[in-house]
Length: 77
Image 1 (cartoon, rainbow, N blue to C red):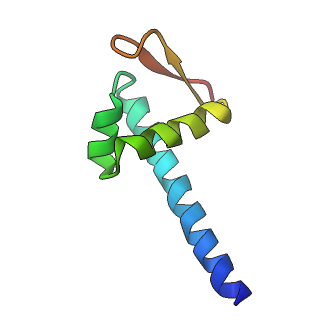
Image 2: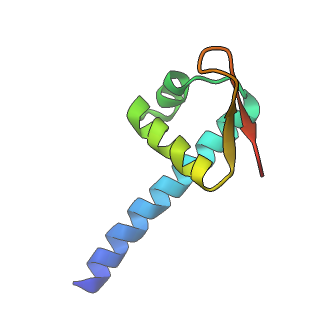
Image 3: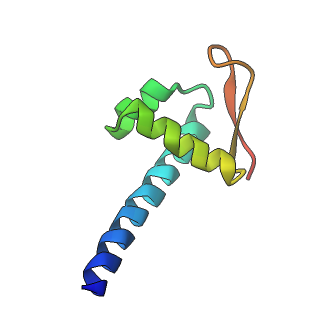
C-alpha cells in the first residue's frame, strides 16, 4: 500500500515539476506571455497557471515587474 501512495505522490510531484519547468521555458522565450497564453500552450487551466506561478515566486525563481496589463516576467535565477 505504501508503494502505491509513494508512486502516486511521485507522479503528481513529477508532473508539477515538469509543468513548472515548462512555464519557466515559455517565460524565458517571451517575458510578456500572459497567463491565458501559458494555459493554452500547456493545455491547463488559468487557475493552475496562477498556482504554479505562485510556487515559482515563493521559490524566488520568478517575479512580476510592472502591472498585470503592461508588465513582464523577470527571472531571478
